[in-house]
Image (tube, rainbow, N blue to C red; front, top):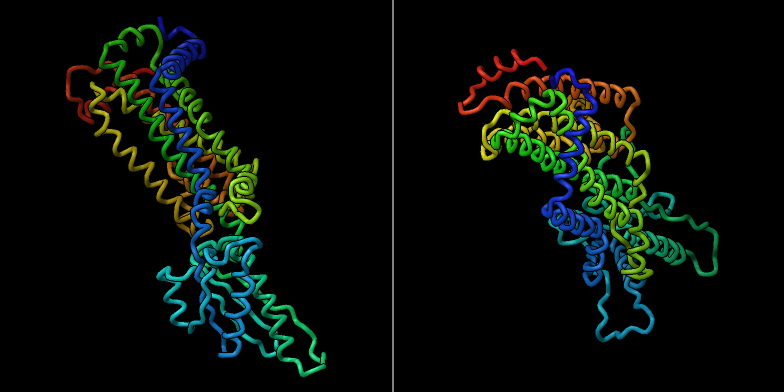
Length: 442
């Protein structure tokens, strides 16, 4: 009988059938095209935002420790940042920066209320050197920051020359200090601030990866549950269970539907990753030599892609087995919505735990604990890997615990599947269902 058949051949037959049925569906093809267009649109978001942002004035409030330095800073920044390009119609041209002096408290409030985009705090140190600190909300725009730093250097030169006695060069020129202070920006595991471009890249890519993992688990997990519930409600399961063991059916269904989901996922993700990888060149072609993409992609390395692939595979496999068990529990596909809600909440919890990790740089006891405990570890550990260096022993421990948890869940899902697929025509309570699962011989 079925239990004497070898495990692998029958499981492969089931997997091949599930994969063929899914990928040949017109709905599968149509949804893949739609998701591909959406993914490319998301990857193009930084360039699109930069393109739309080109006509908007950037507000900068200048704070200085004396009135003379403040007026000089405003004048120099305006001349450097608002220099009109050649062959421009000055009657219609709008300066890209709006610069005005402000006191410290007013400038801070305007920045927090998003009435200005940045604050330039200029101070003259005891040795005569100028210190310029540019403060923004979140990660500053790379091109604007570079322009402000150039203006700060010009301010240092003119301030030095203005304070020299006529014909004297006794005081040597000191290059002004220029620092960036993004409010609310995370720091690395060592406590040092992360470079702004690296921070922007890690945060952006990490968020994209976590969102893709969350959505993929929900969509493709429901595919598995719906496939099991549909076969059970149509009585096809009675024929299948006589030709293959529950273990073969579960493994084949998870592999087949998972393979179809992976095919769609690659068709959607690969074009988006290509756009991310060539984002700088696309920004140059669309925005011109002075344009920027808004979000660098320097953190898109093979190591991070490998980490994402591993945690995505393990996370999907874990939830797919649970969804298969849930699908065998119901008698009609319509009943899946109620039972799938707790699974969605578990996946959402992992997603919500990962987002603060991305914003805080991966530190904290809660993030470390969540990155070790399945089923949250696929989300949390990936977020930690994206935002900083994770100790090798923590990464290895997380993977070992996750793999062990997948094996335990798979064994339990097979027993539940074996009991659930043959329970028809009754409202199955938890106690009766657990009792049937204990009697099932998988």
